[in-house]
Image (cartoon, rainbow, N blue to C red; front, side, top):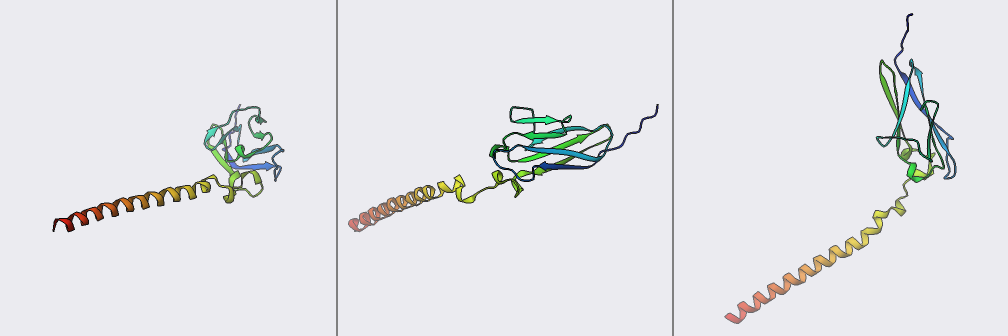
Length: 149
């Protein structure tokens, strides 16, 4: 019996639904145009994905469903497809998607910005204290020199 193997080609990820709200499920489906006996696997931000209450894999790992999609699900999802001839990957960055409002970064509420004013106050207070101490020492030295004359 002669068997013919075809390498993996044309990998894509389709997101359904196209837009999400925080109470909806999202499914990422990975497909290939060509390839004999493909094996599918997923990573999120470079780490392997395992099934949990919130994540389920279907169709032999071809589809990944994120139940009740939320901010913690944001990141880069990569589908890897392999067979005995080759492997290919395709990534979908949900942080860069305008269709996923949960993943948009709101600079007005960025936590780092809340620390800017206290950091500036501490920095200027430290500089001012150092300047006062320096001025006091210089003044004492000048006073001692004038008394010794």
